[in-house]
Image 1: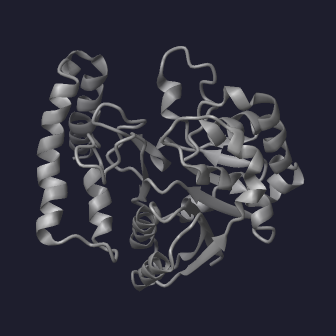
Image 2: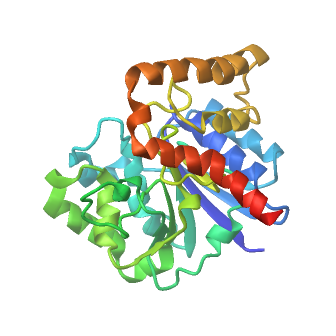
Length: 310
């Protein structure tokens, strides 16, 4: 089988989370999935690299560390965006030239986990498109200007061949030079505006953007990929994240595995304390219609589906 090319970008601080993502991909892969990981190195220590390489024990795969010269991104350093967005996020804008011999690659942010094989995703036919992605959770809000077209950049399938053909990399930079002060979501804005009309929309389950029980881009009970979009990630105690325990389940397959006592603290204790904190943070949450949509979709709908099948 052809290689499934996967790319992540991180510095030393996020290398562990990149490792958890890789562990989740390997764990949920098909036996015949041939995975090749390309890690864009934003300053990863040799110790962390060795730890990441041990993930091959989960499933044999290819893991490559790609050195990045930030001098090639000097124009992007001018961008003013949200404080929690790391500069390494801009690395993905030069993937076509970084990997001249690859036709296609799946890019992931590090705050994600996979729950399904990537084969189907990688083999999606996007020959007439530059990228494929899932609609951003923001398009579900009223008055959003780009409904049904603006995708979340946390997970994107890049048609590198098509992007080189159309010089999309050059167009990214050209767009930046005319709109530097208007980019709230950094490279996500650049990608969506430059590739407008050349974006293939995937089913929501391939990038379930999740922050709390109510705030999710999809209420599917079978997410294929989960994206922890909130500022407070699962590894931040009291994060409100509905899917946080899936992160810790995958963490246990890595060199950073928690002790039994630590695991209980970060799952059971964290679940309790997060719920208490959320009640204090948003005491009137039960008055929001969306809460009942989430409640129905998460618990009632799956049961009804099973009853219909019976």
